Image (cartoon, rainbow, N blue to C red; front, side, top):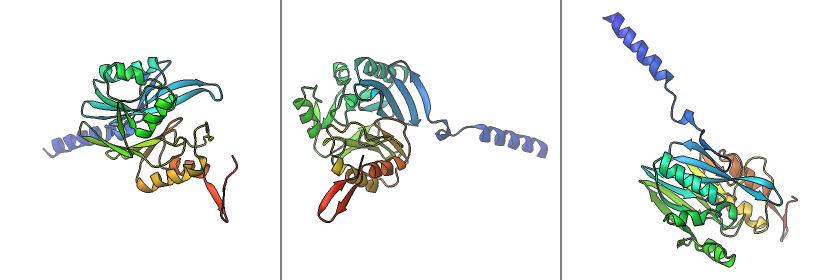
Length: 260
């Protein structure tokens, strides 16, 4: 009997130790085509990466986020064009069997906005800040259906998600997304990957950029995963890197931006 119990215990120990944790399985690439890559980074969170051909920076990889709860999903930033957006919708609704509850561009630039007409043609509700909707109208872009002022709380299958504007930076309207259930923050183009340059500044407020990210850093001091608008995701070090990249200095009563 003792020998049998020992054998059962030994088998249980081997099996238990051989089972990988869910966390150890991530990141995991789940889908890849020429126009779209989908990578799972936690139990309920996926990064979608599509591509934008630009004059100044060549072909640029652009990140968005999908957060799920139950069998529902919410998309933050669309892929860059109709084809990649259709591919994301078809994967979420088909292969992954999620119901897409809505889509929210984090600012008005094409790299997070380009596929919005495809979402709306499929009857998927769209949301954005009032600032973003105004800038979309000013630039003759498709306008999201539902607006919010400073922040928006979303319920996705019982998971609560916050979208909030903390100040100007990459654009005047840039909002970030925080998923407290997994301590994941999507910074969009407001947050830079480690080692990145400043990038496109045509609509930026470089004087306020660091201050805005400092507010985010202070608010979400325990964040575990940070996803930038372009490049590799990481931890809170991406917030610190972005703060330093755009840090301004004060001399007397004047204010001077550090050299690029």
